[in-house]
Image (cartoon, rainbow over all chains, first blue to last red; front, side):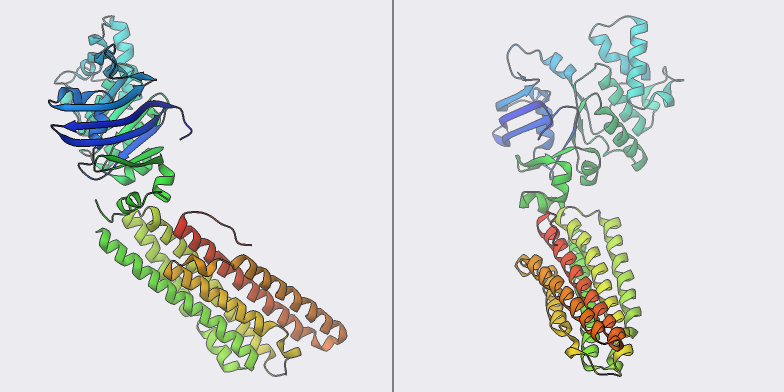
Length: 253
Length: 216
């Protein structure tokens, strides 16, 4: 990989109650690029994704060894504030999960938590977040409506706007389109392509065509191991590992 | 569904091999018609042009359908990409057979000059290259196409030699101009057929390894 890395994992292992869910994962996530994680169900893609913002800390009986660095800083260092980490590393989930608040308050929520009170500043952040998430034109006249009244695709873009509002460096997306119809999916994919101008995106997807369409780099995982990681073009045209070849050509999975 | 797709892909390959053999047979019969001055055989080659065109359209459509419905990746994608090239090359080889068969009709009524020069030998070598290219595609066997570059050099040298020999005969006796021009054209068509065999070989290499090579 020639692009500079923003996240690096080195010999990362993770156990859930003794089950070895990630085995010696070493990878580099290039900055301002989209990296897709693919693999069959239960291979550890989401677990790996949730390591990057330490979301696995919230689960009991998890043991992690090895190292993960963000901007060359160990994210497990005692001095590191996990709230700051999650501000830098935002996340969008499979199912859109807007707060039961107005559209405006959803986007303003993060900045308010981080202490921004000035109305003009919040207005600016909300507009910018919604614009970056390609939602502004659709909701600018009804910012005070409930977010729950939006369509699924709009809700998912609102969640992306909410993530962007705290100015993260990295956006983690866990199956962001699996609950959406093809048109909404297409909008999110276009958005992902635009987001990499300013952010690093890591996306977990079951949909290999989606991985091929949106990502610059792809990692293939199998039974907790990262089998192969490289440029998407190479992985989908000519993978190095036979296991990757067999998975992406549908011979198992 | 993946299993169904792979069965269809295998069928596509089998049918493409059939088409390649069909094109190769058109060339073989055209050359035999030329050597034996057999107008009937030549006519039968010309009559096959519609059939090979129908094969081309049907197989290409099959490829496009597999791409549209299955979004193939990795080797599956490369097999279809290679198959499309094999289809085109096979059509061209068959068409050169047809063109040579048309020449047979022009030259069959008078004896050959210099036993057709090196055309029969050249044709044997070209058809061997076509056979090896088809078999490499069918069996994923790259060893069959190992020496294609030097084999193609031999074909180029033979074409040049036939050209020079033809010019010599024409200068000696202008009455041979028409016939020798036909020989020179046949040598040119055979050389193009060898180039198509090389194209198939290049694509088989890509299909198997993902690497692009150029065979001159």
